[in-house]
Image (cartoon, rainbow over all chains, first blue to last red; front, side):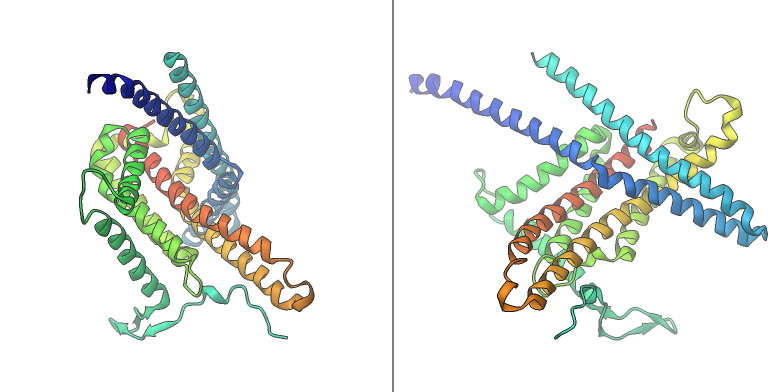
Length: 106
Length: 244
């Protein structure tokens, strides 16, 4: 009984380590995937859309036809770019924190 | 030759016509039907899986437990322990969107999440809820979201509108991403299926391997988009709870 335990426990540890390694690799892959190119276009587009909607309704409200539309178009572009910047800033942070984790493990 | 309409599958059909409050159309459509089916599928999947509640899970139970642990670890990684109380909501969102995407993969079914109004409804509800959580946690200090620390004073009038636009674009980007991905995939499948009919018996088999490949890919997209939607909700929740 005792022998069996001693034989099986390192195996279980090994399996546990493998599972956690596989999980880590999987998570990293997923994170990279969801930061992929398909997100960027949507972020930029939605920023511009919100900016244009803002400008349109401000113009309608204040009766200043093209002024706010033009201003908020550029603000929308800037907002979209800011979205993308935030996306990359987060992913860079995650990568560096992962690197730190790996170093600590070793 | 029959005409191929790849967008016909997204048409709403009223199954039970009903008007309330003098002209507000709240008919029960095929979209509503598949929403009900998705909710039932999620309930059957989870309740049925946990029916035995065995210590050593069987296949079904381990699938249910896997989906629970998947979201729980995601929430813990992105928000931390402060997000624990929002887990039921996040998990419900994930399971609902996942089941909507997956029932959409069945032949002759309707993909609820391919309509931007549906995804926008989900996204704007979450957006308002997260904004309320932010104000409840930080009071008026939540307006500090729109002002990154260390901004030079002359940049403030320019930066605040940009941050506001960036903040308000969150529900838009959430809903467009989900709806566009679901719609594009299903439309492409229909177009390729149309090629089979158009090319006839001699060469019609050529697109079929691509349809098989794309169907597999669509299953991946169906899962991935539910995952991305949920992890973004977690990221936004983290912003609201912890601010920067």
